[in-house]
Length: 170
Image 1 (cartoon, rainbow, N blue to C red):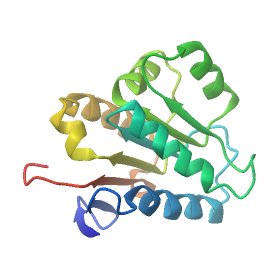
Image 2 (cartoon, helix red, strand yellow):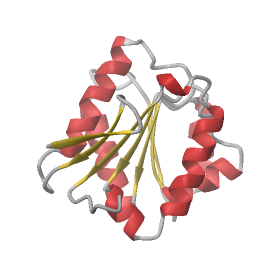
Image 3 (cartoon, rainbow, N blue to C red):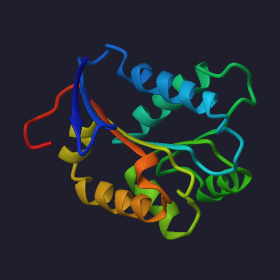
């Protein structure tokens, strides 16, 4: 995998081939770190992963589920359009540790006041180039502006981008 630092020493852009294990490459260290910090169970999202499609969001969630030591270790919620907002809102109110979603549905939840990013430690963009190619640049910026406004100490926050290809403009 190719790593490139952005913004400061903590933020990264990672590039590698499709099927190389990028999803595991960001899920495993993130989950391990949250375990060490005993961050699960606080009722607020500790990590948010954005994906350009529902299929990728579901795949990421399956990877996160497979990493659990036991069924109740942490809660993962996957949100995307075409599914019930009511059920997703109920899950968020019960408490979610890791939040995976598509930009449009994340913004829907933000606008309804369903998301509290005050405990967020990680935001990850998977297939960042595709997300930006598909016209989600403004959505990503809106989400990140909201995150930056809610995270109490931005120095404790990590932003990562993963993709199979990363054009120069990214």
